[in-house]
Length: 90
Image (cartoon, rainbow, N blue to C red; front, side, top):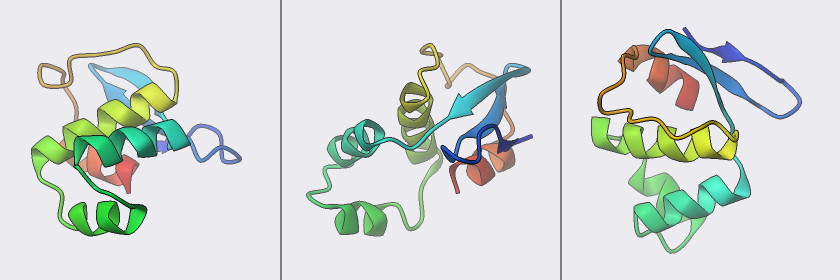
């Protein structure tokens, strides 16, 4: 289940392997996503992510976890609810 950890920062919480993990959109996370999706601008990134795939969601989650300072996790092997993950990213 997701929720807000710190409203002022816009943090979201996502439970990964049963443990709460913070997600945070930072400028660094945005830059990482632009690079990962080869988007030359924020507009291009928004268009590219209008209908994200499951693989896209993993890339986004990794960037947001890093933005929150969370330790790296192998999300491909982790237990997480896909619907909760999508809500936390949204």
